[in-house]
Length: 332
Image (tube, rainbow, N blue to C red; front, side, top):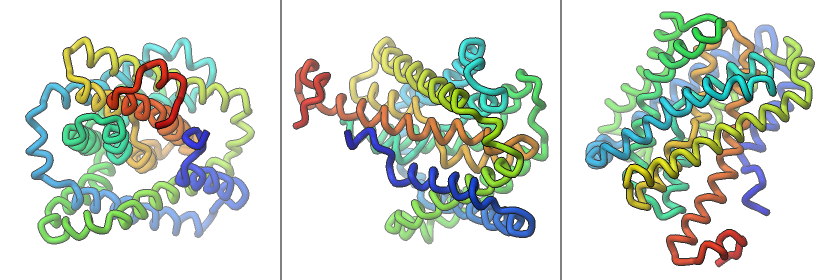
């Protein structure tokens, strides 16, 4: 049962939401937290730029069919699922929550977990590194554009030039600065990966705390009864299930090898909490941010649990364990 339990970071997210519910930051303290959060987000993308090796990207670009398939799943399949399934799934949640679902559908793939699950499942790890990294980088540009298209279709406003400029200044400029500085500090950053993890998770927790503090002060928990929260879990699970099935059988229909299929499944079905929370802070300044980021937080945990089970089954089958035994959950 251990694989179904929340990881430490998820527990930290829950604790942060509880803290914001009991002790929300307000007044001058909220202003200080906003500044600290902005600095942490800029540092996060600077370190990501310093860590991402240009040589690894160039070396992995030869498998262009796989990379295009992953990008199509991330930036085309998910938004289409969010729009097509809206008549069926939107009655389960509130309009603001479904706006968060649509935003979730526009996000890039994760980097760390996509690579980790691909490795566990015996997939094409070099291709996963390139696909996940490319998705994360391109998402800085593609996600705001998709948000503009998707939100315009909901009648809740569009994407302003100010929001695009804020994304460029707060996310892309630090990333480019990190790429430039990679020549001098890239090796040090990769060697001290725990620093990046600390900044990564710390910046997310800061955004979640400030977002939920503002939401609690606006009466978040009065707007979010348990049936709506349960409906949100169902909507997230439905989206992930569709993505996993389509990427799996789509990769087979396109004639990819088993290693490439694994990479497509785990890179093409993920959504990045690390990129989504900072982007939401910039793109949805006039919206209830707590309700926007809540779907991303739930999807994060659901995708980790589901992909942990799926990666293990892939690995056992790659090791020659019969499908019936894998389905029965026998450990090796």
